[in-house]
Length: 398
Length: 169
Ligand code: HEM
Ligand code: FES
Image (cartoon, rainbow over all chains, first blue to last red; front, side, top):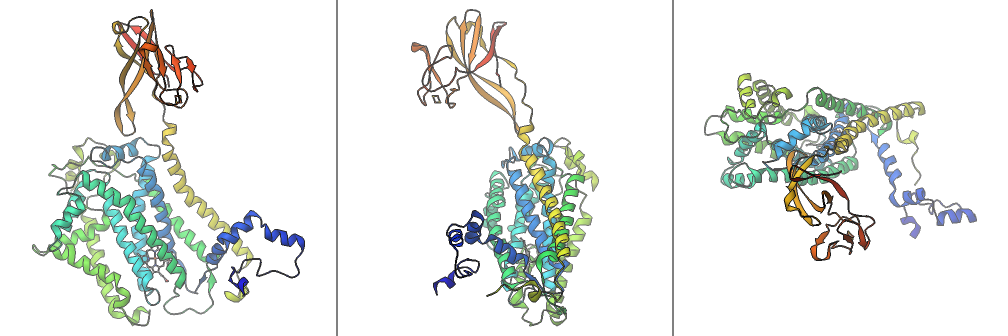
């Protein structure tokens, strides 16, 4: 019958017979609230999500995805705000960031939220990856959830790489000079790729506008689309229970799991807010392409790669810049098909766990080494010195 | 299809309404805190320009007194150094100066209707607005057209052989 096609909420389906005159009118002209609900189904959607079944054993580890999501919203909001004061040109970028930090109401705080937020999101996302990896959540039927997640992770790295250049201070400039140089080591097309990424032979005005466009338009567009897809897939396949099933029946997402999510979000956001207040982000001297005594250093989560590069014997750099990262990235993308074992239990997929441990250890140790060898970040008081001072400050600290 | 009730779909003891209420309330409080942590500062940040104090206007010499004969109207451009966000800029302004003996008046060329730039025509001794046909006399008073009031004036004076102008906000 035709009526069966209507949504289950439709009053027509639930129609009690016979109908009073008043009832007939109400149905013909529903109030605004009913009308909206009939058209949008919003509260039905909210209810469905709040009632999403959580298998027993699901708990704190499953809160990380939501933390990432919240921090992501923070990045978008603070990023849009910063873009209102920022000016992407070598002549103005540094001045505008300095202006934000020193003169704009709450400028240093908002900048701090964005910059510590980017670090926090990296930590949260890596924890989220580790948790889905060890729980074997990437296995059938959630392969695409993992693949989409992996692409998102690469987009995140792109965000951080392009964002790092924007303040156009010494740190930004030199990290980008060195970081883009890495691209040139790609076999065959390296030099052309370098020009493409830099928008020219050298890091300059076109690099800045290019990075800015990528940072505020290309990557956000991709990220929003893929995050939407990721969340859709998460809901479609429901959350995976523990690897060894726990006795009991599922519980609804609301309120217990949502409460755990909220607590973790509070801690994560609290940490970012605290850091933004306690250690306002600094700014070094304006980018100086002629400076010779500045030690370039990338954002801390690229330090692993940076260290790997340092320990490579001469002539084998391409291993660290291209081969090893390439293998790890591809391996991550196709993980669901590398690991064909039926079981999600870590004990039953020893090989892949061992491989992953090796990778985690490699990245972890290299990053740790990098962090220990890097001078501590500049404090704002140092940063406010004249343009020539920061290089000497860096040298003195080493 | 009937909606599954909570007790059939979920754990054997359905969550007590009390617990649902308390946790729901806590989630609400946390969400408010978290949303406030970003929206508050960002609104303050974006609204920053509202809190900025306007720089108080300065007297600026714009031309020699001798270049402004009695009864004449002259258009002058002059620049003021202003803080423009992160940069110091030379903001250029235009005023019309009219001399009446030892008095000088400075007229702002912004049409009082919708802000087009009016132009003075010497032979007619009138200001004409190119947008909707507003016409003002040499003193800035409305002659015809839609403008609701006379052209705005800035402070102006002679001093030390110069004409000085102070822009009113
Ligand atoms: C924008 C970044 C991301 C957001 C907002 C996000 C969000 C979420 C959320 C809310 C969940 C459900 C709750 C949870 O398990 O924590 C989830 C599950 C999942 N995520 Fe992500 N995620 C992101 C990135 C990633 C990445 C980088 C990966 C891996 C490469 C990944 C792989 C997965 C998998 C496989 C699941 C299913 C977990 C299960 O069913 O047990 N996600 N994600
Ligand atoms: S703006 Fe001048 S007449 Fe309308």
